[in-house]
Image (tube, rainbow, N blue to C red; front, side, top):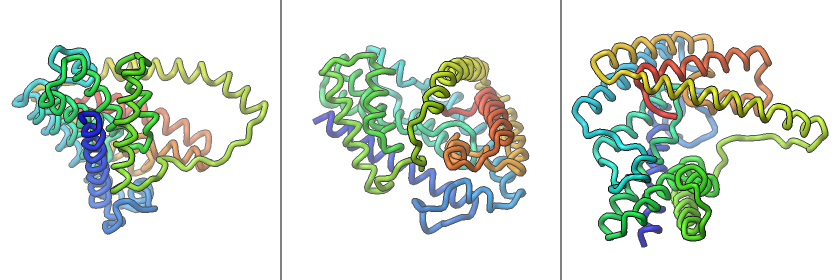
Length: 316
């Protein structure tokens, strides 16, 4: 029963957060207000917005991020990450600060923060799973399992990737492929994804053209794979250091405001940088980027992602 309720709760939570993100995006940049889930993309809305509006929205984003996380760190209970919860003797996460933390991530990403939005639904899924398990009287080990499954289910809900959510649980959080882990991971993720269809529809995140298999493609994949792996490792190291050095005191609002003001100014010429990395990726899949523009966007995205984490914003 807890497995089913976790899937349903994570699905509803992920769906709600995704709809909130779309609503804020549409209101902030003034596009398709009556169709939150439609064919007009966030990038199209940002591109149609005036330069002044882009800067103003990002300044507002900086104020929300800086003041919001300052209040959480100053007055809230200490945040508990999903990995810490899964390894803890008490896997429950603090409900108020976790919810506020998740909402801040969604709000700031919707306004244009370059950080990711997938941590928030994972946290909500884990939060619900932990407390459901507690009230159901599950053991600590069982609760840890459900907290991990809640995170995977939240991921599955917002991205419509039930198998991806399950693999995240098995490979990243629990590092186990035992049957007792595989079954609840799959069940919760599938249920969450299906529940989220109610508000988000059964759609893929990206539109990828058909690529025919060829010797050149295989060769390029073999050569580029290790390069991308090294680059990803370096990026993780860079962002980890930036996050560790982020302020939690009175300088947080100031640094956040300056950081997002700069991002807003950059967005005047490069609207593709706003939000998580979906826009540049989709433009790349659609063959709408030149090599020069792609390289420029890559450098800017790495820089502003790192600077945003260093300034105290959250998200992955």
